[in-house]
Image (cartoon, rainbow over all chains, first blue to last red; front, side, top):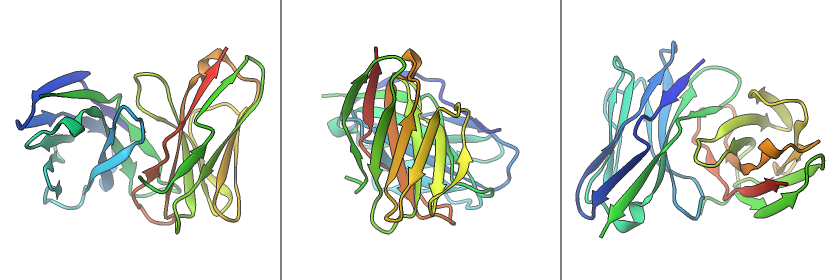
Length: 116
Length: 113
């Protein structure tokens, strides 16, 4: 079974600064997908970024980038130039690349507050 | 907005009752998954449907059941409601057969009294 751990329950960052959210996972699979989802207070879960484990290059999406360390089973999210709209709960999630379905296994999430 | 819609947005039931939650998938998607999110927790996988067949189930009892319709919309049914069933229920749609990203709806907040 796969597990996803987000050990920081809350973080706070000043607007325009950079923040890094941590995530570790445990799996015996060699190929898989990792995601960061954002859930604002309005609660709709939005995809932030996706990483395929077979790709060595770290994924980036505008101000969002990841640091994927496969050997360490670590998948952190860096948010640059933080904006007030980044205030949300952030979830790290794992998906197997094999198997019958595309089940997501989530961590407990981290609440990020961006201060003006 | 993801194009995935859910109804109702909020629901209050009493213990022992039955509830049906609905989800309309994003256009072009033929897989739907349901998740339960307790307050302050990450979503937990309930089950997934692909082309109207259940193709995976999490650690939830049989009183949680579902359906997927030919138009790929879906229902989640919960019988004999318990207080611990109070949660946000999320559906997510994607293109089945691939490891495609899943897109979430806004959720239904269920309160069981």
